[in-house]
Length: 109
Length: 117
Image 1 (spheres, rainbow over the protein chains, first blue to last red):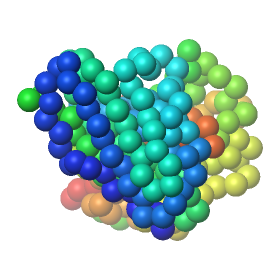
Image 2 (image 1 turned 30 degrees about the horizontal axis):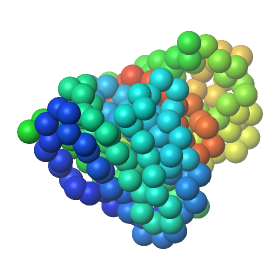
Image 3 (image 1 turned 180 degrees about the vertical axis):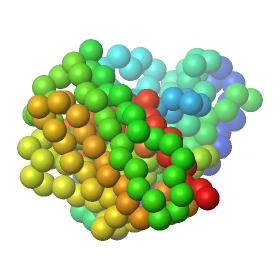
Image 4 (image 1 turned 45 degrees about the vertical axis):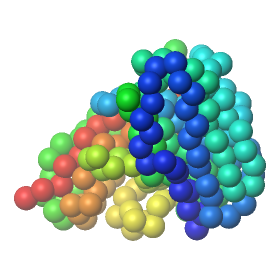
């Protein structure tokens, strides 16, 4: 079973700052199999990034994904007020076929 | 636009059963696999089950295997999750989500299931 570990658990930043969120896998995974989601309180998760670095439809270009192997990163270049939320990474593997990281809460400082 | 709407959640006693539904619109439902993903209160996301576009192949998380059954009716554009032998740890918001093989998009708004006596 591949375990995804996200860090930090909570990130406190101000609007306009740059956010860097990490997702580390317990085994090497294909970049094609790594996605990122944003979840705001009371809402369903929304796909941000798929294939480690491709933005989903309608996602602003301040969001970018990178990484390979076991280390992946979600970067928000310049935080807007609406970006403060919880972010999850997710991978496709063998058993179980899908798993999520525990999440990073991005909060306003 | 693509839309998924869950229903059927509620309060059920431990050991009881519940059937969730997910009504799909805005896309060719019979051509896509669909997932169930759940989120316990204040917790992270947990993948629950997946059914292929034709309903032939189904996959389950170990935590629900043997208790939950995923099914679909392509003539009604609807996905189901039959949940039996419910436990307290099954308390969660249950989301359905459209399959893109390696990721999920979009997600429904979710339906809350509470297992409590």
